[in-house]
Image (tube, rainbow, N blue to C red; front, side, top):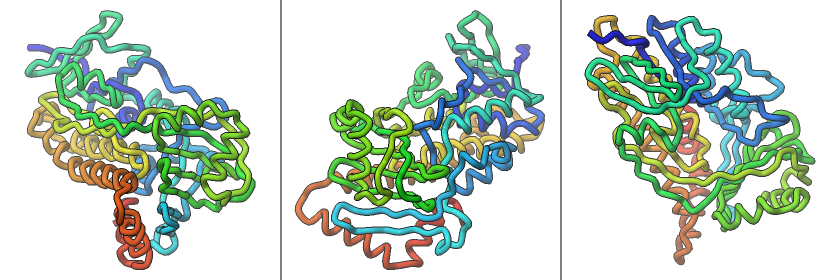
Amino acid sequence: MQVTDFDVLIVGGGLAGLSLACALRDTRLRVALVEQRPPLPAPGWDARVYAISPVNADFLRAIGVWKHMPAERMAPISAMKIVGDRSAKLDFSAYETGVPELGWILESSLMACELWESVKRQGNLTLLCPATPKALEMASVAAALTLGDGQTVSARLLVGADGRDSWVREVLGLRAINTPYGEMGLVANFECQRPHRGIARQWFRHDGVLAWLPMAGNRVSIVWSTPDENALAMLALPAEELCTRVAAAGNHELGAFQLLTPAAAFPLRLIRVPQIVAPRLALLGDAAHGIHPLSGHGINLGFQDAQVLAGLLGATPDWQDIGSERLLLRYQRQRREETLLMQTFTHALHHLFQQTFPGVKPLRNFGMNLTNALPVLKNLFVRYAIGAF
């Protein structure tokens, strides 16, 4: 009879994989995590930030991570202002919605480093780092992973949390449907002349979707989803010219900008993975799905993957096989609706504002203004988006 080294083997130490490991802290399960390199703190301010929804802030509190986040690096979102391409607008307010805040803006590296420190102290977890997956064999009783140094580890359940170009997913032949947007997400941080007052701002423009996300202090982080050629042209701009262009694109609402971090850009694509489980396997985070960043929900989906999977595994009695397909299909069913809804919504919204057919612009902007004029509908929409039901 084959003896397994672990109960759960997580491949990938990004935010989703680390949060799953932390969420399994108080279970009886023996957990291992494979990662090539530990996360490093960003020099200065990290240009890659995430909008964390209240429900995921609660998840991070539950796994003991939130309380260690430095308050001086976090920014609550008190309101959102969304502007269409003909001055249509849609405003959301935490006060009007009846919640303390709509979310929080946190730096990616800040969360990753704190999650890493948490798993390093975890009694039921073994960190295999630096380690690189080399070969994978799935058997009836265990998954056996061979690492680059020749070591082989096995587990009753293998979790692929190794990003949108998942090695695990590819090796096991799970289909991923990639739809490139022909766009890049341009990110950078700025010091702004006027206070942002915790308001997240977003513009649907002819050259893409621009978001200004409030950071701690008088700072904002931008995500500009724009065609490849425009993103590359902006990357080549001198700092002063980039500041001028970003400030002008947002109608100078926060005055003059000063660049804090060099601009960077990454290609955008929709990733649909019809099957995220198989016997002894579950996919998590970006390995299981990818969406357009205009909703800001990418990592929120990943954290919810981790919470749901950890809940199922932690509630499984000793006699039940945590790698059984029957159990893992419950995880797939529970995550399918939210993932499909967010992918469909963001994909449709992106294409709606790309359309140039006569009559489309007035119709979409009328829809935004109508929604903004109906408080009940608007608040239902935002409460669903932030998980406040």
